[in-house]
Image (cartoon, rainbow, N blue to C red; front, side, top):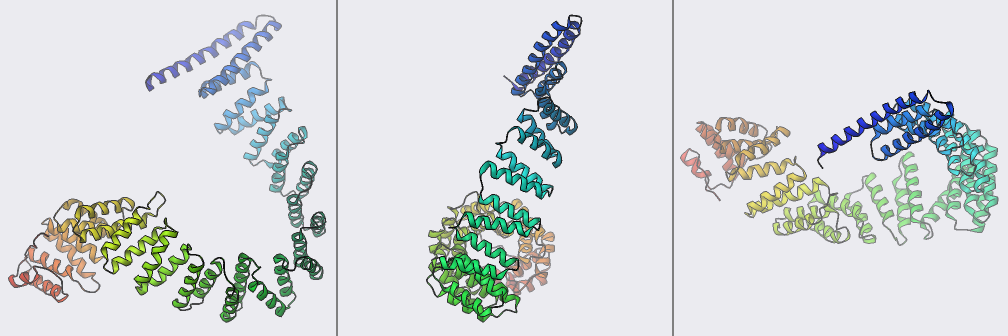
Length: 588
């Protein structure tokens, strides 16, 4: 069946529905002449029919017809709560909040024991940010079913939104009756009492946790921390000593003791305890990292005595390490205080020994070695990384570039091909694009133009604005005299993006030259020469060729001589100078 036929059927159905409504109204008018008893019975049947038909139409997706039918059902029986409830959904979807409110409220009023009606009304109030009304409705809903834990949780949030702390405590008390006491309820009460600035009740709740869980020493530490923060260090010390008597290596208690010593000005004891924590094999690595970060921060605030921090780091690292976390922290600190690169790199090397799959350490080390052109080390770092982190494209990228810089084009090409095999939908488009761009350069150097152009196409698929690839692709097309129109379009994008890039300007000028547009080419080659930085090389030779073809022979000779001085490798350069004219290079 065609979509047009389906549309016609749907239009006919809507017409039939409207006709049915009109006929029903006529029937009601006719029945008004009958007895009141007969009218009540027939109206009930009519109401039931139109209500059920509305539901059926709604299930079939005919919302417009369903809405009209439900409105008529509501007209037939204005005291039916279900019709108001159904209509409220339509009005809400239509963003007619006034009508939706009336229907939600009417449904809940007509059937106050229906929890669905009450809950939906409360949700509507919340959506309108009418929290007081929402609270009243949820409270009524809870009064009809005191087993609704979810309603209490909503009430807790609503009272919180209105900053009614007393009511929040009342709700939590109800939750305790329903669920029994719990750690989370007690902690929540503590937070609320803190907001109310009722210290006595906070302390009472904390003490209750300690009393209820005598074997969980963390609660005693928590109690001690609260006492310390609220100006009661002696009482706090009593709690810490109790815990450490039971568990001498309790980390939480030792860290809290550290805070106690600092607050009380007992710096020597604080330093001694900190050193013990950092050198102890029983202290978790994550705890050591946190302590050292805090020590570094405080040290920086006091002026930055790097010797003290380095001593702490070295003492901490004197123990065998299971993870590279502390080495990474030390390397980051050495970088922060501008230590020599060799010192930083040696720490990253230690991190890699402990955790060979630490991609971050390898990449930072590679980036530190790269400016120094330590390509052999880069290759040695990248090769095992491809086993530990096969999805990390950067390792193929750096290894391939390192080979390329060494002139090992076959090894570079093989590395890039391995990297390409790892490409997936989440790969970084910039890295993938550069992979293909360099592959295109290598393949072109090897005389494999078809494969090179395919690589450039893949490069531009991943990153259409890879200007280096656009320039090279366009230039190689131009020197082979193929598809010059496309070459011009690609090259033009590069000079629009970087109008002072002499390489890009030279390429565009040469493409115009190859099309015989010599005067235009002269404009762009002049710009290329103007923005030169360093040797002109091929650009000078191109300038000479263009000037020669525009009849400026003397200027052409000057540019060709500059190209020769820059030792440009050209099979025709000497002939051009000798014969004072442009000579086309033979096709490769």
